[in-house]
Length: 506
Image (cartoon, rainbow, N blue to C red; front, top):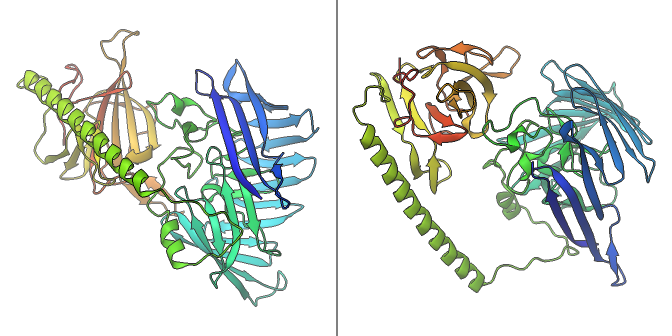
C-alpha cells in the first residue's frame, strides 16, 4: 500500500502555478518499493498571454476556453484522452463528453445542481439533505453547522415501490478541512478510508470493505464526480490534479488581495489552511469540523494502517517555548503600534474635519491590535466597529459601490470606491468597506442581504445603504467600517478626507 507522497510547486511572479511535481510510493506485498504512476508526475504549466490566469497546457494536456473563460475542451496528446465541456449562458456546466462517459447536469433557479445523469446512473439532488440514486437508493444527510456528519441510506425494490428499507447509517470522521477521512457504519465498524494530498485534494489512499459502495463526499466535504474526476463545489467545478477551477470566478475573492483577482486559483493557493465552501471564496474551516470528537466516540479498527508517532515530550516543550517567545514579540509589537496610533490621534484632536460619532451610535471596537473576540489571541483590527441604535448603516463618504455580497469574515458587505486620494489619476484610490450586514429569508428559502445598494450605484455621505447584522465572523449585530488607501487599511479617526468625510450615525 502507499505510505508517502511528496508534492512540490513552482509559481510565476503573478501567483500562477508554473510547475507541479508529485511522487507517491509505498511498500509492496513482498517488501519491494512501489510507485503509483497515476499520482506521480512532473507537469509544467503554460499560460496564454492574452488570458494570463487560464492555463493553456499542463504536462501533455492542452486546454481550450470560450470567450467567457470557461473551459470547453481538454486533450492529452500522450494518452489521446479527449473531453469537451458545454455551458449555458449562466456559466453552469451542462454536459461533459469524453472517451469513457457522457454526463448531463441540470440546475435549479438558484444555480444549485439538482440532477446528474450518465451511463453510471442518475442522481437527483433534492437538497443538501436528500439525494436519490437511480430511483432506488435514498440518502438523508445530517449536519452539524455546514459539516455533513452522517448519512442514513435507505432503498426500495423499484422506482414505484413505496416500501423503504433502511440499509445503513454512515458516519463521517472529517479532518480539519471537513474532508471525509474515515467512514464507519451504524455498528461503529470500518466502512471506508480516504487520504488526500494536502496541496490539492487528490486521493492517495483509498481503502474500503469489499462490496461497499463508493461514497461521493470526499475532499472538504464536496461531491466527487467519478465520471470526470472533478469536484462539484457549488458555483464551480474543481480539478484536484491541476489544483485549479475549470471556470473563472464571477466574484472577487478579497478585493484588496492580488490573488483574489486570480479567477481560477483554489483558495488563493493556500489549500492546507483554507476551504472553499461554495466555489466563490476562501474561508477558514469552521468549528463544526469535529473529527476529534467523533473519533473519541467511535472505535475504528484497521490493523493495516501505519501508526503515526506522537511528538516527544522534548519536542512539545520546545514548541511551547517557541510559542511563548512568539507571543511575547507579538504583544510588544501590538503595544508599539497602538501607542503610535494614539499619538497620531492626539496630533489631529480638535481638527474641524475629524471623524466624530453622533447621538445614538456606540463604538464597540477600535482600530489597532486587540484580543480577537471569536478566535482568541492578538489580532490587528483594521477598522472600527459601531452599533447604531436604530440599526441603519449610512455611507460615510461619497463614492461608487463596487461590490455587494458575501466577503469572507466580513459576511454580507458593501465596498465603495471614493476615487483617487488627492483627485489625480495616478494617486492611490480610497475605498470604504462596510461589513456584517443582516440577512433575511426570501420566499424561495434563499438568504438575501439587507443591503439597499448594488454595484454601480452612486452614494453620498448620509445615504442609508443597509441594516447592521452579524453575518460573517461576528459576536453580535454591528457594522465594521474600514478605510483603505491603495489597499492599505488606515485609521478612520486619523485619515479622513476633508471634502467627503461625514460623521458616523443617523
